[in-house]
Image (cartoon, rainbow, N blue to C red; front, side, top):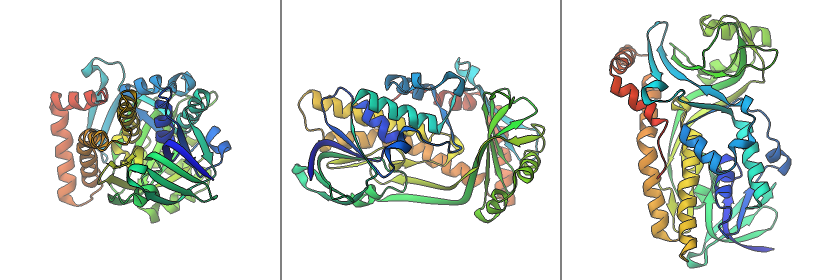
Length: 399
């Protein structure tokens, strides 16, 4: 069977779904191809990840009809942020008030974003979803578009292909697009924990010696009082020992690792582990195809911008495609795709490189690196324009 479509989106994760929803009302046919079954897309399981969203990301999600679909009780305010180094009580404090806001952003569970995106696509009938299938072959046909062969024997002929299938994108490879990849040699464990002392809705990034910790403040669940998402980053072999602990051992271990600053901590969710790998595609578009989400830029989570960039990529690309379609131009026009590539690259490359540098310096245990990071934090904390620039970055607009 051969299906002719305007746009084939490979990957129905949050970025792919948001891009598809952004094409609603364009008059273009959009088909999503996703290995997971429809039931898993409609009701994704909790995966431990709490997504830090900027004010601009909220605006995009409101435009796409995602924000109203998320229970307000599940949206936790991110008031301020604190960056700490080792056992020192000194911290770099980033305050929303420096840019005239009452909070830096919002924390929303990843699985609820995925559910809202799926529901928005389904209810708008803006795309067909081919679930339980994956792309096994791809051939670019020039002006005729791209041929996609699926593992069930289906063939799609698409005018434009959009790869949204993770930072390890097989579609990106099939398109012949290379990527720089950085394996940080660390594993990140995430879970929700109840605790005794208030977090005051301040996020922590704590670069300890031999570990990195983060605390993402959440609204308390009924019966569990104060609650936060705890993030622990360790080398894989050390993480394996922590992940294997029973619940009581784990509670004591996390209380110790957080130095008792939140009082006793208690696990209230499942635990999930992820390898830390950064990816930056060498091109975000080639004739007849473009990349969005992590397929374009896969961020280290230390600056909490991964999905924000994913939303921006969906908006930047969809805006240009809609404009081209509205005036009768080719939706796979090389100049339009090159503009998307240029704009999204300029918007993401500086923070991607800065994030990798921060992750490198703040996980390096050599004496020069330890001295450098202490100096960096103290200098940054003493320069109001630096702190204001960091806070202002969370309210940026999309071009």
